[in-house]
Length: 304
Image (cartoon, rainbow, N blue to C red; front, top):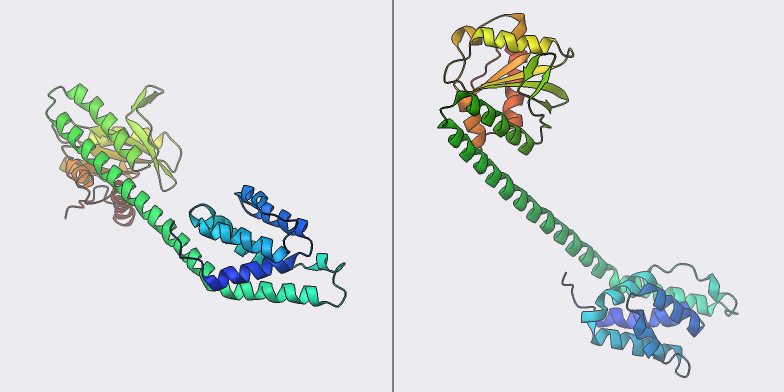
């Protein structure tokens, strides 16, 4: 992440604060080594002969000269030194209180010189995080759209299959992939107590059984009753979704049989709306369930 150049005033304030927060050179050196990552540079400085201020100035100047390597370390020094608030270690050397006073004043000056700078850095970090989130969203959207197109192509391939049984198995597999894409926790077909269940999924904390038909004829009321019997044999709050690509007979849609009161219906046109990206699968299920709850009608024609 590119950062704005550290100002001359900030560098001067950093040098002054570092020179004052510790009295002994070895304490100051240890503080710097523990603060920065590239601490090897500290050993290139003479901490014996020169004055403390001179050693600090040489160190910071060398780091400034190679900000491509040391900019993050300079920022850490500025931040850690600016956060300094315990000066009790100076008490032993501070007979008249001037050392602590000078240290506090220099740290306060450093804070004042760099406050706006760190606000700018924080904004840059947030902007970078937002950018990365947006990139991930774009990637996710691209993947989702591509996957939906692939499933749509498979749907058309299945449509030309003249083997009814094979077409049914292919439809079950396709629907499983579709429900997985929409994160509806699908389960493949299974048998229990002699019953064949085409699939199941979870939506909005409700468990649904799935029945899917592609038989080149309308699904009749008797077929809905058979599915309703499977639902009523399960836990009380279990619901059902019956998908018939070629639609449902009038007596099936208009039936008032109690066996159909826990299911909703989808046809091929509903499914194509999902494949075309006009509506999400979870949205279509929600709308159909709400309509059934409010009106008692198990087949809600969204295309209207």
